Image 1 (tube, rainbow, N blue to C red):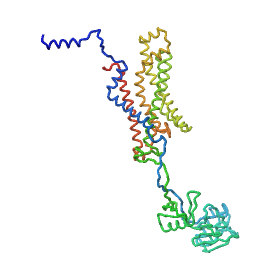
Image 2 (cartoon, rainbow, N blue to C red):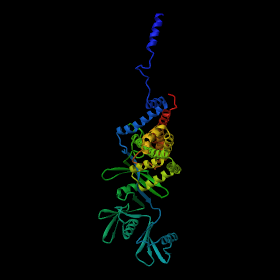
Image 3 (cartoon, rainbow, N blue to C red):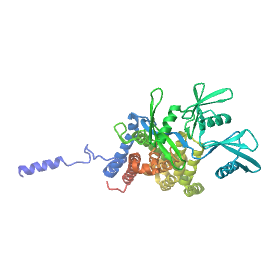
Image 4 (spheres, one colour):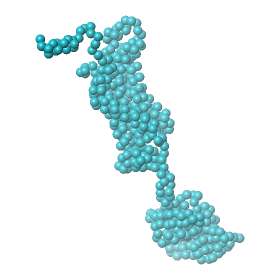
Length: 517
């Protein structure tokens, strides 16, 4: 035998094992085998990494975010608001000594008489007469009476304060003086002076204005000075579109003049800098995903929305699983009339139209103004209550198979109580199938919550969820112009549901004992 053959024989002897050799072949435990098979599935592993990323984004991201979930942001913006209205009288306006002293029918008859040039007219059973006291100014009497009951004029009289209603006699005297271009007049014991522009002063102070222009402030506490009115009317008569006014303390304000043809009036618009919500702000360094309609940071809302969606998904699945395991375990173990009763209850739940019920309950909570936090608890309970029948059927089917096996016969022979047989021997053997089913149903629960929140029936402001974030696309303008509002939430929702399904598929394949090892 050559030297080479001797070495080969020695090596072969070294690698030959005997039954009593200290070294043993290592075998994997069932859990390790499942884990190994799961990690062989690259798609399932990808789904697991996506889920880890979503959890880190939602929980860790929300914790390190510099902003709060409901923190509001503001910006200084220039806004144009209606400040006042100016009406130019082109038709006679009537002022009466008392209400209904000169009714509408009498006013119509007056217009006819004025057009014919007749000083007397009648309305109903009452006879009237009028006199022309000036250009476009008429004083009306009941026939035979010496005191006027009304007057008609293109000009109107307003107090200098803008809030005081002047007496009929005072207005009549002012219009007579202005129409006749008098410089002063006496009424009672008071003496009034009249300027060329129709300003009436009393004791050296502006008392009233007579003009065809009626200026009304939008805010009741706003009054206009004489200078403001004069400059405004001058700009209107000059046909200007813009008006700048500097008041006595030097404050300058800019206005735009807009003519409204239907109402034959001018709208005075004022441009003001105001602090408003920073709504629909484009992505920036401060807000990487912009802001929403309430001026809140979208990235932070997305993080907290993920928390809410995942919380609801897991809690609902836990509720479904607990109820399903109890009902399915009892049904599958005892059988007979107990099984028949529970299965008929399951059939009834399958026949209930859950979506319309969700909508009705959501509308009822809206009407009752349920607190948003309590509303989330109700939402989880309702979704869990309607989702347990599928878990019950799965558990029942597994237990019907397991209860006939030898280990259950041995457990019954040793005198173990039925409840212990169910919860300590049967249900633990159903856990692998439950894990797969629950993992895959998580995605469905999250989608259901998102649908209800999108319809405004789920999670409510100020809490965020991916569903109520996407609710903004109800507005077509937002859908078209603010993609950063709803696309990130849609992507997060898509990735999370897809990842749960991928992980569920991977677990199903890993738990399958027929898989090749």
